[in-house]
Image (cartoon, rainbow, N blue to C red; front, side, top):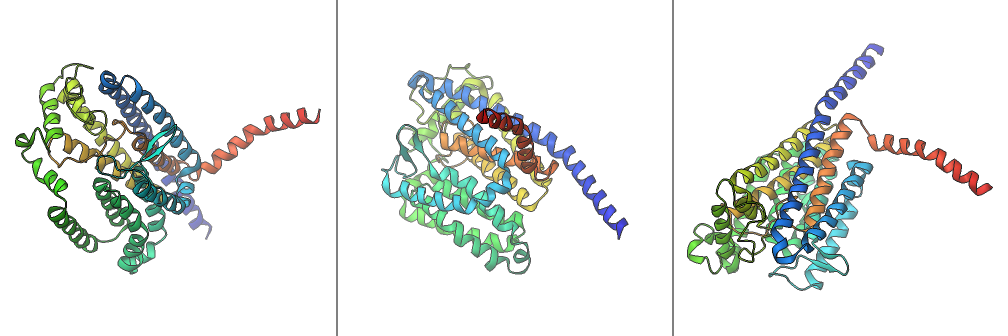
Length: 408
């Protein structure tokens, strides 16, 4: 019996050493890529918005960057497991916020997405849904391994859909079709990576997609136009295709090397939403196609490193958390790049870490923190407990000194 136990311990030690050799370097590179994209986003936001709004947007985004950094550090301190334990409460809270946005605040550009908070600004609950849904599904699916093998449709897919479906519906109720689409794909992707076969998922996804497409084509003229105009925007350049046409003009005028930093012409109120959804168009205009390709490479590096961390996760729950965060950030980046160059229909989807938007930036930073937490946990199992114990040891002399001062 003892040799068997020793062999198990040796295998666990070897696996932990291998995880450290892979996860820690991947986490370091991942953190560097995230930090570089954040700095680049702040720089480009300053260039894009200074001529029309001064430093207002830049200072607000800088404040949100500090909030996102605090969220990243908080997630690292508590660990993804503890945060996932609270995910059901987060899901209930975000559902309430979505309903408040849907019914208590006026529409902006035809959508009920924002809650205006005095002194803070606008908060977009649907952005936080991405990371909350990831946390909940990671915990939900990791606890149902047996059901995935025995009854995947009813006990896993339907049960998970009954909990997550209302939240996604509340997002759709606010007429945020893009985020609804992203959350739906995230749900199916996590179900697939958890072990549910594509033979179950793909037919359901095709039926849902076909139903939504038919409804849009029959009853939603605005979005129906978006689905067709992007194929040939030139005839509609002064009407429905105005944003896309000016985005393509910005990319075309930049060429390979760009007009120069801060030298964009299209950002001077020619290109709507230049500091948010179409900020990468200004990157192409000012810094050129070559630099825009570097941005795309940075997104690909972010995605690849996150997948490496997910593959080396110590637990199934950690693997699902890292994979889910990588999925929604990678998909969001792909949609944004596709929209600005006319490869996809025009849709308000910010570029992760780069576009202006506090809710989007905080969500991306917290997602990055969760991925880093999975990487650190792979190398140092249950590291939050060790970290808190270390802090207690460091705090004991201070507490003892304060107690003595009080007695005196």
